[in-house]
Structures are given as structure tokens and as C-alpha cells.
Amino acid sequence: MGKSPKRVAIVGAGVSGLIACKYVSEKGFHPIVFEAQSEVGGVWTHTVETTKLQTPRSSYQFSDFPWPSSVQEKFPHHSQVLNYIQSYAHHFDLLRFIKFSTRVIDIEFDGASNEEMGSWSTTLWSGNDEPFNHRGRWICSVEDTLKHTREVYQVEFVILCVGRFSGVPNIPDFPPNKGREVFDGKVIHYMDYSAMDDAKAAEFIKGKRIIVVGLQKLALDIALPLKKYKMIPKHDFSQDISSCLISTVPSNFYDKVEEESIILRKSPKFSFCKDGVMIDGGNESLKTDLVILATGYRGDQQLKNIFKSPIFQKYIQGSLNTTVQLYRGCIHPRIPQLAVIGYSESLSNLYTSEIRCRWLMNVLEGNVKLPSIKEMECDAFQWEKYMKRYTAQYYRRSCVAAVHIWYNDQLLRDMI
Ligand SMILES: Cc1cc2nc3c(=O)[nH]c(=O)nc-3n(C[C@H](O)[C@H](O)[C@H](O)COP(=O)(O)OP(=O)(O)OC[C@H]3O[C@@H](n4cnc5c(N)ncnc54)[C@H](O)[C@@H]3O)c2cc1C
Image (tube, rainbow, N blue to C red; front, top):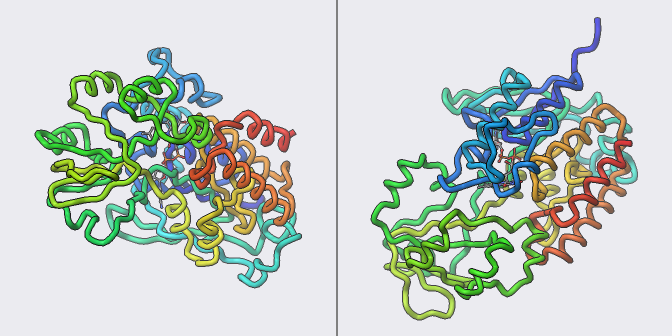
């Protein structure tokens, strides 16, 4: 009797999880995909009405599944992006591997003891020369979000595809008596706003004075209007590119600025008062009914929270002045039998997730041998130095955008 295929848990059925699922099943492993939501598509299942793809369509394309000819837009609408991703899942018959409405509560490694793993250093990942170790497996505790029942799965490998633009919102800190508690109006994070359907969102904001905090994603093509409206940031645009903090604004955005239904204000800091918001350096409040915090997400926290072991949590989080250490953007040198796809960003995340999945399959099949833990740590440290040098305060985003081709070549060289 042949050996049963190795089980690979994939957490998340966004773009990264779907690609991982396709390659894992093609290579003869047994994928089990856990998806907290009831459909595939990740961030594209809940975006605001005006959102379009910001990468040109031709760069945001699966290598073996082109966009349908009915989509001609260079920057398709988010509903077209979602349709495209869903068609991919149907075309490659991936839905049969996915457990929908199933949230992974935590994962725990059962294998070598913490002391043993702590002593791995000049040795190889997993303590041996293989991606799998016969002693090691992951225990995944999951919850059915509809029935509220719990189950446990045992797998030989885990691929975390939990994304970084959902889950844990980044909420700014405020000094005492200057936070949201002193404000009479309502405060929500962009995450809650984008989770509403279009009709509900329109009803929610109807007739309200609204302040949106955060306009971090800046594009070169809006530099001129930014100058006109005195919104040019102090730092260099190259930093925004290197940290993937670029995007396009919705159509007619500046028409609305001209007619003053949108007012732009530059302020590095703000605080709350009873009837609104005080911006740094100002002494009058900006009166408002609703504040929407478009202040981003804590992707590192989301990743960390999935581990049961405080030691692995510490490994992922690192210290606050380090990046999340991922060799080739995928493998934590000290967390065995596990990979992360989709954490470190690029300008075309679909492409990057696909090339990473191909690389990872080579690792799982034993065609690409990982170097020793020490060597992987040194490599990750070199990337950290690069991130700190070129992306300044945004280095924890671990973005490979500006050196995308070089990074890509590195993965390809490994695979030769
Ligand atoms: C508004 C917006 C516009 C964007 N535009 C672009 C663009 O133009 N170009 C580009 O390259 N990138 C863009 N991105 C980045 C985008 O995140 C990536 O392109 C890509 O969609 C990420 O896919 P992912 O699968 O890695 O993560 P996600 O799409 O975030 O998917 C993660 C999935 O994991 C699930 N999950 C998380 N935790 C758990 C758990 N514990 N248990 C079970 N399931 C879980 C989530 O429900 C989700 O479905 C954009 C992002 C946003 C938010």
C-alpha cells in the first residue's frame, strides 16, 4: 500500500491561499484550506464601492489563467477582480478543498521540544535536511463560525495565507483625555466601514460630517494636486514606492476637493475633543459627527496571534525594531514545517504570491534545499538592513517593491 499524501493546512482562501492550494494539490500533497469567511477572495470580498485594482491588470494575473476578454479596463473594478479570483477557484476545482466559515483559532507544533528547537542553529530547519520531519506535525484548532463548534486537525505542514489588510486594525494611541472616549460622535475603523455593503455604507454616512484620518498611500500621478492642496509629505516619494505606499485616488476625487465637499488637511498628529478633532498645531476643533480611521492594519499581530506557543509568537513578532524575519519572504528560520505567503508586500501581490508558492513547492518536494538556520537568519537580516535603509519608518511592512525583479530572480535561481 502506498503512503498517504502529506497533509498541508492552508489558512486563508484569498489570492495567496488559492494559489497555494492549487500548487499543493498539483504536487500530490493533500491540501486542507480553512477560510473564516463564507467565500473565496479575501480582501476583495469587502472593499468600498470606489475601489479599483491599482496594479495594471496585466501584472495582476495568474500565470495559467488570463483575465476574461470581457474585462478590458486597465484597472478593473473590485467586483471584476473578485469575479476573476472566484473563476480561478472554480476553473481549477479548488472549492472542494476549502472549509468555509472555519476560523483557525490557533496552531500548535507537536514534535521536538522547545529546548531541542532552541539548540538548532548551525543545523537545518526542522532539525534535519527535509522540509518534513517524521516527528513533527501541527495541531490546528478550528471553529465553525456558524455552528460555533470546534474541531482539531493534524497536518504535516502549514501555509499561512492570512493576508495583512484585515483582522487586526491599527489604532493610534492618544494621550489621556484626548482619545475617542472624549468625543461625542462615532469612531470606526476603515475595516468596519468596508465590511458594510454599499447600500448600508451609503445610509450610514448619509447627512453626516465625516473626517477620514489617513492618506498614506500616495501616487506619483497625484503629486501635482497634492502640491496645490499643500499635502506634499515631508519624506521622499521613493520611500512610498519602496514601502508599497502608493495608490491611485478614486475618479473625480479632486473635483470633489475643488467643490469643497472633500477638504484636505495635512497633519502628522491629531487628537479628539468633545465635538470633533484637533489637528496638530491648530487651536480650533474640526467639528464632525463621524471619524473613520483609515490608519491601516497590524499584519504582524494577525500573524503572531495564530500561534499558540509564546515562543513562536515571540519569533514572529521579533522586537519592535526588527522586521518579521522571513527567509525568501516565506520561511521563518526557527519555525519548522511552516511557511507564510502574502506577508511581505510587492507592487503586484498576486504575482509575488504565485512565484513564492512555486518556490515553496520546490522546497516541499526537496528540489530546493534550505540553508542552515543561521544562514537563513543572516539572509533575513540583510533584507532588514535594506528595508531600514530604503523604507525608513515603514520597514516593518517588509516590502520588496523597488527590488521586485532582483527578488524574483533570487527565487528563480534557487529553483534552477
Ligand atoms: C483596498 C485594497 C486594494 C488593493 N489593491 C491591490 C492592487 O491593486 N495590487 C496589489 O498587488 N495588491 C493590492 N492589494 C493587496 C491585496 O491584499 C493583495 O493583492 C491580495 O489580495 C492579498 O491576498 P492574500 O490572499 O494574501 O490575503 P487576503 O486577501 O487578505 O486573504 C486572507 C484570507 O485569510 C482569511 N483568514 C485570515 N485569518 C484567518 C483565520 N485565522 N482562519 C481562517 N481564515 C483566515 C481571511 O478571511 C481572508 O479571506 C489591495 C488591498 C486592499 C485592501
